[in-house]
Length: 137
Picture 1 (spheres, rainbow, N blue to C red):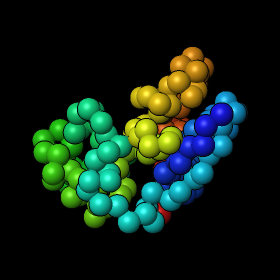
Picture 2 (tube, rainbow, N blue to C red; picture 1 turned 60 degrees about the vertical axis):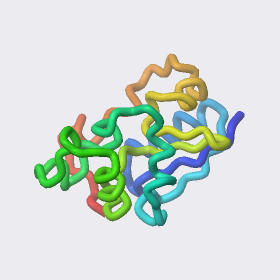
Picture 3 (cartoon, rainbow, N blue to C red; picture 1 turned 30 degrees about the vertical axis):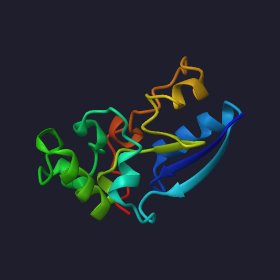
């Protein structure tokens, strides 16, 4: 059993389902509001490991959907600066398990915590799958 710090957007049904999957796997989850955390670039960078910069972003963020921010053409320093000022741009969830960090549930250490063979696609946004709108707050 692990203790997982899980940075989520409050009210996100997908994040709630992800938390439940981790709890069902026997882990303690400490849920934190990603929008209320005061991020700095260095701390935030530690969650992305060797992921390409474009994978750091929440593709469902309003500024990305509108075309204002294009994750495919941005450098790391600019991406981090944008995310520090607008945490909705950060790919969720951010996970910290005893200092091992990642963004999303498709990387270690989360894959091992979930047993790699989870039946659900825990990354898929429930609102997008159901063609409904996610609360913007």
